Image 1: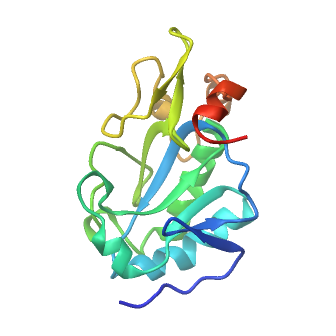
Image 2: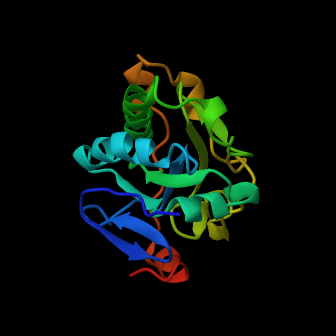
Length: 192
């Protein structure tokens, strides 16, 4: 199967094309996944990559339709991962992705991303987790492995009830900030 075409500054790392203009992503948060498949992958990238590039939002995507079709289990459909800096940015990104994809691709056109929460009106899903490998457990004051398969750990409140095309930004802004990891956490994740 052919490679997707795209423009922008990307480099290949572990099978993913990473947006090199924004590698300083947060440690953890409500990551977004845009579901895709071989049929709609190019259309999704054509419309979503400019949104993410213009907003300087950290993201990565699979470069070929073959790689997208090879995803299975809990990874099925996850052709594009987005790493927002905050819940405000996450809400804005979902709204912009929806604007770009409405009428182009819908939930019935691509796989449902299991054990993640569908947000917006098109093909965006979310779960709280590590942007690398571990998340901070505040009540135990330790770093724990990110367990794929749950929408959020029990100590993280779900802000998505506040989401709408016109959210109450005061309530969203007041939502708990995402933790930044200590040097210990960065060392555990192999980061500096």
